[in-house]
Image 1 (cartoon, rainbow, N blue to C red):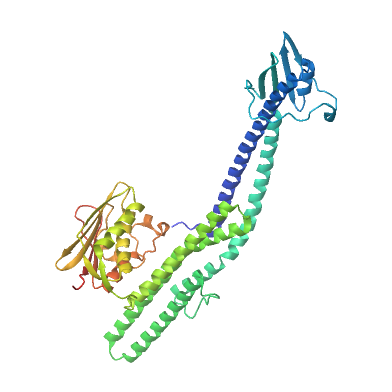
Image 2: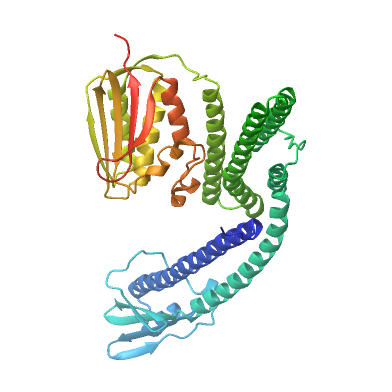
Amino acid sequence: MRTTSLRLRVVAAVLAMLTIVLVTVGILINVVLGGQLRADLQQRLIDRAGYAQILAEEGLAAQSLANRLTGDDVTVTYSVGGDTVYGRTDPTPRGDRGPGAPPHAETVPGAVVTQSGDRLSVTQTVAGGTLTLSSSEAGIDAALAQLRTIEVVAGALTIVVTGLLLTGVVGVALRPLTRMTELALAITQGGRGGRLRPSNPRTEIGRTAGAFDDMLQALETAENTSRQAAADAQAAEITARDAAQVAAAAEERMRRLLADVSHELRTPVAGLQASAETLLRDNPARAERESLTVGMIQQTQRAARLVDDLLLMTRLDQGDEGAAFEPVDLSALTRDVVAEQRMLGASREFDLAVAAEVWVSGDAQRLAQIVTNLLGNARTATEPGGSIRTSLAIVDGTARLEVNDSGAGVPAPDRERIFERFVRLDPSRASNRGGSGLGLSIALALARAHGGTLECLEPVATGARFVLTLPLARA
């Protein structure tokens, strides 16, 4: 497992994103500004070509016309009647030379725009002669080069200052996570009595910390109960040994649960922290702010999903499914879930074979959760181009739903272990795809709460095969 510093990774990731943004913005500014300046230069030449038509209609002499159009880095060549005149800058103040700027015109009939090296030219027929106006783009290139230099220097300074500030800010922001890690390590080493005591138990981290403290209290209570039971059963060595083994197993399960919860919460906490720091520090543009906000909401939802799944598992362990049962058409429900998964996995083939109106007794939302979990896992395990087959029939007086996929399958030794909490057989299908490792555990608990079963059986050909059985609704 890679053990690169989280602080270093966060700082490096933020600086990398900042560098990409700065480079992208700089390129866009240079491209857009350069294009606009060249377009303005071309439009200025076109405007003067149109202005030449007006001056020619006023009967202005060739040399005077050329002089009038010359200036502001624009050179004029006017060939008429076999003679060629060159425009000269008129020293007369602009206010004494007749009309000011040439009238604006998007296009001038007969004007031809050409490019030769860094000079842009517009050629126009005026009063029987050929008028050529040209101007150099060297000034534009020089301005863009100076702008690029400023962008590089300013960007480098921004990255250096941001890196220094971000290193300190990330260290401060990671203190709650460090506290949770230290306490978890102390527990794994046998330490007791420590608590997180969140200041605000209504936030996601606060709720998790509160659940953490509750589990510690439950662990200590279980240990005290175990010790009392052992003291009461000193005369029976076998009973005392069994009680000690039960307590040790409970403690180990609790430690694994604490370690898994800490690991699952690390990623959304880090994502929230990075996004929040970027918003506070950089004051990004609206589009980036919206993107960062969406990311923060997604990470919050991810942490909330984990907490909700833990709470649901707790209720199911206590025998409280939390809903009243009623007749449910499992056929219609299955078709709806398959249609939804087909949209999410358009590159996979979904085959559906369901009997008409298979009615079971249960909670529609919980039953949909079971079917969605099975099909979602199948979609994730199946590569693009693969197939997922779903069938529903009445077998031996019960509703039997089968989900078969063409993925890698589940090894025989893991077909029972896969229903345990936080078990992921494929590391590549870890929580980066949104799973918490509780889906199949919840699905199995919900199936049992409905009086049914959920099994992972030997596949017919390849892939994985899950079978859900539920009792039919009473007529």
